[in-house]
Length: 330
Image (cartoon, rainbow, N blue to C red; front, side, top):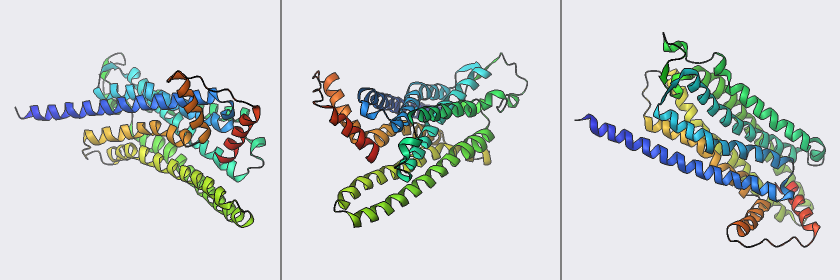
């Protein structure tokens, strides 16, 4: 009789986890679809920077459509073949790794935009941006599929037939040394460290430019406000990335370095959904803080949701002005 309250509590935790994950998936898909639509609708947003932002949005849409549903399924432990379960687990890593590398690409792009503003347009071309996006996804596939070629828990299953069914859980098929040493230290800590270094340099360059321009011109205050907004966005990027991704990797490190330590299921669920919530926050950080995006989304919502046609642009220079604003004040 005493076991029933424990079972009910576990079911309550499972239902809460599924509900939160579903909400995160919906917000992530809707927000990132709006980002892609905004770029498609507004030609002024079709530059190299937004090529990286669209790549990030696609990765975050995949998180909402594939990663979160798969994470829910794996948490419930359905039965399937070992390599089927392993492939589904690798799919989670591929998509989430694509999101992380897209974040890194945006950080590098913004660093170049601030560091070499006069040569940026000649160095970072649309073609090179597309090549960079392809490289991000190729690296995501290569790193995510490493367990499929042998770095997995197959031998830990003992005498088992590859055609027999197992209870499919992430920790059943995935080795923790891969998750800690390769995935975390190699493909989370390193990109995070690079991003912190890039943003630190961006702040230094912005501060130096602000001091020079504030002394040399009368619009120093206006320029300062615009650059301060950019600086705050960059600080928020690093903060949210660390806050959202570190909990689940810290849990993996505890599980690996301290096998006897008991990790509550609630803590595991918290770490998983925190890593997913980053995909729902990215549209707000990278898109909705940019004025051309807000204007485009407002016009789009008027046209599609309120059934009001958007007013035509009276003259081409307005589009040109939007492009200049995106290039200068992103």
